[in-house]
Length: 235
Image 1 (tube, rainbow, N blue to C red):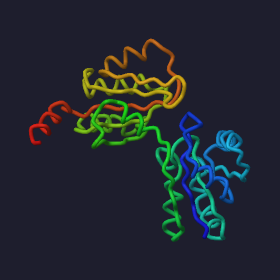
Image 2 (tube, one colour; image 1 turned 45 degrees about the horizontal axis):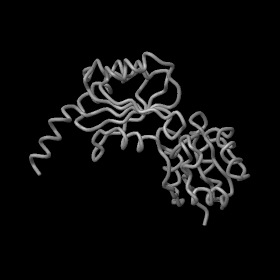
Image 3 (tube, rainbow, N blue to C red; image 1 turned 180 degrees about the vertical axis):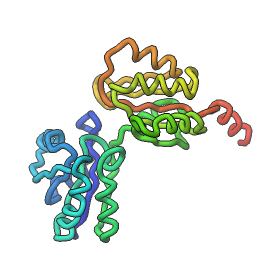
Image 4 (cartoon, rainbow, N blue to C red; image 1 turned 135 degrees about the vertical axis):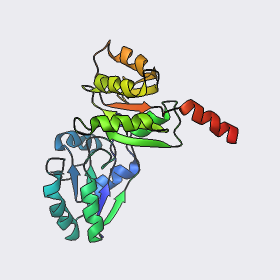
């Protein structure tokens, strides 16, 4: 039976792909890739030679119905992004929604995604958290920052190296420079870095160096220390 597979791919370390993911990529009729060059390198590394179709944020709306038609016609396709799990701050949601609407089977494999290791190794509470992905660049940005400052739970953000300092400085303005944070960079790679401390500490650290790689910011919630002590008292 034809279906759509959502296949997570490594966020850095090429060993971080499951045996099941490799098998599925070898068995499908074709692969939908955010960037065929990036995914092509991975497929060559894995010895996979399936035909690839570009599916990214700039053509997503135009491609959704066409791809769903292909699956309905009998093809089984796999969707991959440049790194991590499709539809997590990456293309995929619109296609999944269309497949669900048409009754097409969708199967998502478990696998790599950047925010989970960043959250877990931050040292901040992870039993409840808010994932915000990328902040708006302009419209609605300040409103979102103010909302985040008021969250009681840990917040996870994605950021580019080019906007990291600006974002940390804006978070310090609305949350206060003493709010605890962990900034993870180049996760799973040789030069992985996790900077833990206050927002002021993180700003000082990244002001002194050239910033490269993908970034995950894990921010403590408002009054997190007092919330934690209250929970312990209740226990």
